Amino acid sequence: MKKVLSLVLSIILFLLVLFGAQNLLIPKYMDKSREGVLTREYYADAHRNDVLIIGDCEAYENISPVTLWEEYGYPSFIRGNAQQLLWHAWAMLEDALRHETPKVVVLSVLAMMYGEPQKETYNRMALDGLRWSRTKYEAIKASMMEDESLASYVLPLLRFHERWNELGSADWQYYFSRRQVGIAGFVMRSDVKPVPEGWESNPKLLPNYDFGEMAWEYLGKITALCEEKGIQLVLFKAPSLTPHWYGEWDAQIVQYAAEHGLAYLNALDKIAEIGLDYTLDTYDAGLHLNRQGAEKMSRYLGAYLKEHCPELIDRRGEQAYIDDWAVKSAQYYAMQAAQEKEIAESGAVETFFVPK
Image (cartoon, helix red, strand yellow):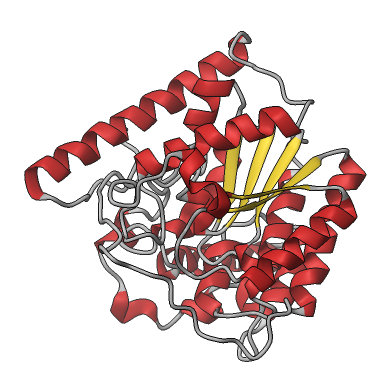
């Protein structure tokens, strides 16, 4: 019995050391690439969302859930990731459905331009924070580059064991927990960098404008999953000026939406109606909207959802929602105030964490 007990204690000690080292060595995404914590932040939400928004930066930087709440009473959350591909998006949706069933899913379609896995860094930022399930396993298999291994996702220490010489203060400071980056998944930027005067889109010619087979496959899976759960799927193209959204790409989405009875909002066609001013409403010359641009986009999106999604109702009279969104709104305006103060003092935004 002593030998057995000794063996068990040795195994436990080994596992504690193993996972302790792993937790230290994995990237914390606090000093850079902060979008890497967005996946895990979803699990702290109350999961009472009627609208779930899924996509890449065209979702989490261009839509403000607080504005959707304040203007329309729609509780929403953005499950976004940097360069979220369609198989990542499918995983975010299927994982979310373990916690809640929204009435509407808004899916950003920019990622249809990618027909195959792109980069390990973005795979990690999307999938490492996802809780383990069959969904995560399948998403990893779909996402892996040729030089990646499934084992390194099961045990990330296999991938990051050489980070000893890269460890910084953030690795120790955020060993046990991370700071909050998103407000209902929205990543705020209040600074302004206008589109240069006289700017014109000058897209390069592509050898083939057809979306890839893998992108179509996972768009089909998302559509089927929404149909199975009785969720209305809305396709969305953000009003970002770059990267260029080709007319040939748009035509394929229009056709898909028509064939499947889906609503499709291409906000690039609605810039004047939205009221966007690219000398004021972008922080990086038209690639993403800043806070005030995202608020304009969200007001328009809310009106569009009200018209096209009859099952959505105004929740502003329900106490559970009022309490939840009072907290999120307070965080939102505290972050806005902090960023605006920094802009006034130094011309730059340094507050990327939600104020405590």
